Image (cartoon, rainbow, N blue to C red; front, side, top):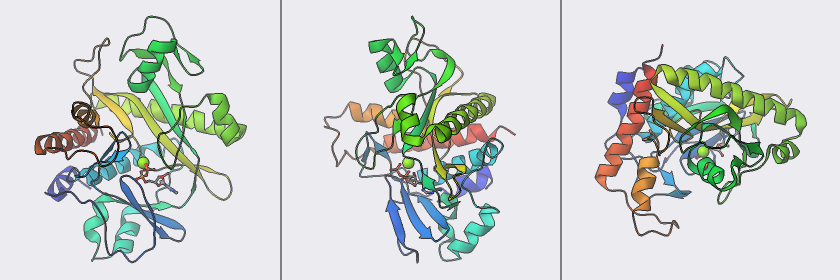
Length: 305
Ligand SMILES: Nc1ncnc2c1ncn2[C@@H]1O[C@H](COP(=O)(O)OP(=O)(O)O)[C@@H](O)[C@H]1O
Ligand SMILES: [Mg+2]
C-alpha cells in the first residue's frame, strides 16, 4: 500500500474486535485475531493496545493498520535473510480470502503459512534500555552476557547480544540464558535462531539508520514447518516489538524518546493503577499522540528506498 492510501484508510474510531468472518477463530491474542484457513492463517491486527501485559479498555484508531503495514514493509526486506511466513503473492491471495465484504480488513491483515511457533521470544539488544539496563545496573551484565563496566542508560553495546525469553501463554515472559534456550530448542535450531536473530537485527539497524532511527532492541518470533525448516513469523520490527529512537539528539546517560508504547507506559506509570486488568482508559490526547508516533515510525521507514 502507498503511504497516502494507508493514511486515507486510518479510521476515526478504534477497531477493538473483528466480527462476522466465516472462518474458525483459533486465537485471540492481546492485539491480533487469528483465523484458521487450513494450511494458512489469517492474522488480523485490531487497534487494541496492551501495556504491562494488560489490554487497555480503549484502543488507538488505526494502530492495527500501521502495525501490519510496518510488518509487511519489513517482511519484504527480511526475505533477503531467511524465509518468512507470508504466503506467495500476498496481497492478491489476501484479497481473495477476504472477498469484497471484508476487504476493509485488508490493510490490517496478513495471510501466512501456518507454522509451529517456537516457544521462545528471540530478543536482541544493541543498546542498554528497559529491563536490560535495569539488570546491567544490578549485575554488570545481562544473564550470561558479561558487559564492559561504565555503560550508561541507552549506551550502545560493543556488539548486539541475543537475550531470549520464554514465551508464556499467560503472564510475563521470563528471560533465559542462551544455554537454557538451547536446551528448549535443541542445539541445531538454537544456532539457526541465534544467527537469524543477529542477522535480522543487523539488517534492521542498517535500514532504520537510513530512516534516521536507532533500533535499540527488538523481539522476533520464529516457527518451523513439518520438515523442521525455520521461518520468520509474527510481526517484524514494529514499534510494538521494538524500541526505536530518533538518531537526532541521541545521548546516552538517560532514557531516549521513542516511537513505541513508552509514551503510554509513562502515562500509565503516573496513574494510581496496580497493573491488573482492567487498566485505565487512555485520554484522547494520549491516544492521538500514540497514533502519531506509530504513523511517524511508518513514514520515517517509508523514506528508505
Ligand atoms: N505463521 C504463524 N504460524 C503460527 N502461529 C503464528 C504465526 N505467526 C504468528 N503466530 C502467533 O500468533 C500470535 C499473534 O497474536 P498476538 O496478538 O501478537 O499474540 P500475543 O498476545 O501472544 O503477542 C502469536 O502467538 C504468534 O506466536
Ligand atoms: Mg504478539
